[in-house]
Length: 176
Image (cartoon, rainbow, N blue to C red; front, side, top):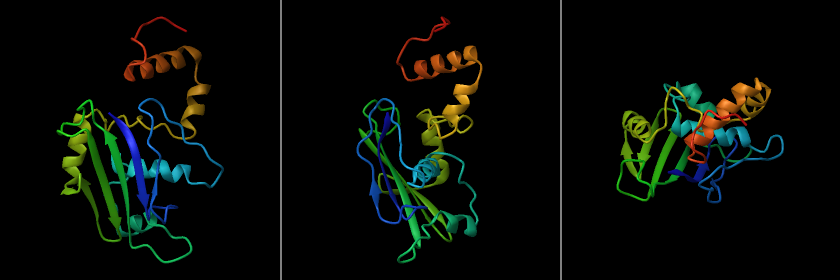
């Protein structure tokens, strides 16, 4: 399972519908100039997949809506399309679409176009391996530098653990 595509509309700096090219099943990197929307892109993914944007008040929801020039935005959505050919998400489909919408008074989740509860989504994500307590499946700006600055032995342990999780190499206690 991996994120195949992300579609964003009306969320933070993304007023018009914006979609990514299909992602690689391996590692993906997002780069761009300052102010190009990289942080908002990662916030969009975390908006759908994590607890970061839970229990939002009306003004918090409003802050997620695009506030730039042009017509005002009254709702937004972020949709993540997963390649589920390994059936890690326990549904009988090779492609799974998870969408979260937000407006000034409420936000809602949709799984393959069907309205579902937040609890159902969080349980589904947990069963697929997305941990609420350890949401490092998206590594944000600054976190890479933090890894670079830590003690080399700890860093090598972290890197080996990451590679083992990605099935890149079998885990071993051997050092680089």
